[in-house]
Image (cartoon, rainbow, N blue to C red; front, top):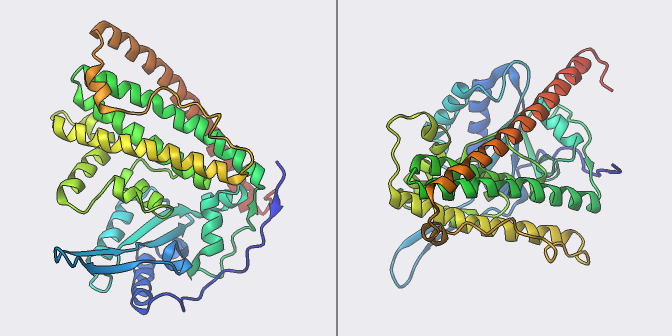
Length: 373
């Protein structure tokens, strides 16, 4: 694959354009991160709207109703760790999250993405646009002496080809989850329907992030994925609103379905909540598809991709699920076929991941020995 060297300048460390209250909170934040991770902390980056200088802090009162409404951009942080401290140390990260939330000096909404230095290094070499954007637009808060590899950017043609490939693979894989959701719904197996709905939502988040950034987080947590998508387009917070407590509880229920629907013996699903979440995900699917097609068409305007794109099956539609009642024998037969296909896909993905992990392990040994190719 041909590529061209990036012209990204040395790391930016200036916070001059960042509001002073946020600067003070960033200082506290870096201290808390350093206390939690200590010698394994490699770098801390500020990225997103505050780094670019286009953060929104809006507070207004509706003149007709007198209702106060506020919107404040999240403070987006990338924490890079190395050594024996891994991004899988959930207890450490949860404690850090609690420390941040409980610190009276931090009032902003902090969104932290955590990555290992090896994955960031490999991502820059693979032109993951998330990491490229962090390096290009971000501000180093800690570790400015650490040198990441020079990133290499893809040509527009290469970038477009990869985005198309992700749309045609990851997005279309979501169709299997949509089908199993409908089948389980017809069987009144609401727990399994919730599991399928979570998988569908997760794959839609992955699709959006891969098409826009060539980057897929190693996370099943929908709240984390939602925040990552929001750094690109805040409209996702309209599709999955969290202003009302009821909305928060329902989204958290969907978020937890990945584990709870499988392992909780007393797991129960309110049909009203299930229908509400299906409608939210239905809107989300349509939005993701439109957004992805739009960005792909924008790469090379005279090569319109959306005109030739064929949607696999129909978009998720609650009313159609409710009205299409199939005989149970047909449902069970289709479920069996889908399970076999999903097992084959999961096995292939596991093989690919094992191969990547082995390659990463060998590259690390070469780096440690000073023999990096």
